[in-house]
Length: 431
Image (cartoon, rainbow, N blue to C red; front, side, top):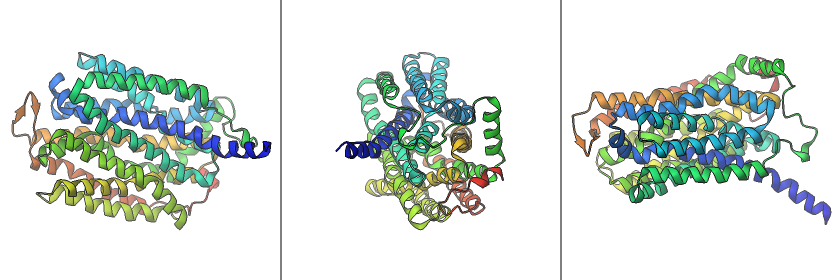
């Protein structure tokens, strides 16, 4: 009986701890995309242009997020995830509260910056927990589950935050989000642990001291496959960083004439598609023992689906829902790049490698949201409603054409990557 209970604990505890890491990623994702459901409110409140809104909600978040990624990876490998994730959750909650209380654009920028700073630890921390607590063959699946919960948080934000914003205002909505973050912080601190007692012989952290940390970073930076993973991830991630997280609801409302609530609900279908697709792509990739082929196949379908949405006029609302779901489902194959990154590095520098890849992925969040906003501003016809700019369908078509172009370039780069066949090649860390 004792052995049975121990075996059950050994089987369940690792997944529960990894789930808490994934839950933090879900929370930070809710905060990340929250401006998309309050775009008109923020543009009206702060008197912003499209480009300025792109900087506030996208770039200032990603400045701190991207800048921290390599350091976060190194710190995860050196100090473990528990303390870092707990502090990161506190930063996210503090940033959300500051953003909610701001009556000046500078305070709002600082709030978004703090949210980005804390969020920088989320995916890398959850992935590091997976390398500590789960066997390597489950990493692709766990990466999909982490991404899945992130999308659930985003969909929750699209639907629930929209209701709160419409009923109480955008500032109370962000205050509620801050309170939720403080509660999650306490749970993580008391439950998550940095060592796995069921695999005591595994080495999860680098050797102590600065030399060991720098050597791990050097190995990751020298790995050509890591750089390719990051570039591919950046280009394939545009469906979220440039569309669903930011411009999606406004595009659906202004270009397709959908009311704000239905636009937010429709946009959430991208996140729901991701939530369902990410773990399934992990399983499918493991079943085929291939990484590149599923990414390429899914990305081609994603381009076709988005082009239908973007270039075909007069689509019905149910069809828009279906297209957005398919767009999220097929685009979520992007998560496989993190499995590739894990398979070409040692467990001792897995956090550093994943942090480097995640940094490259998120660079798109700095560049593309304001670029889309700039194209919209150039093609703006001067229409304003209650102090907020309204853009024409033609302007959105021109601006969002960056997405299929970026995904196509991502397919080309994927063809240049080495196929790992779902096996760990530690020797590649020194290539």
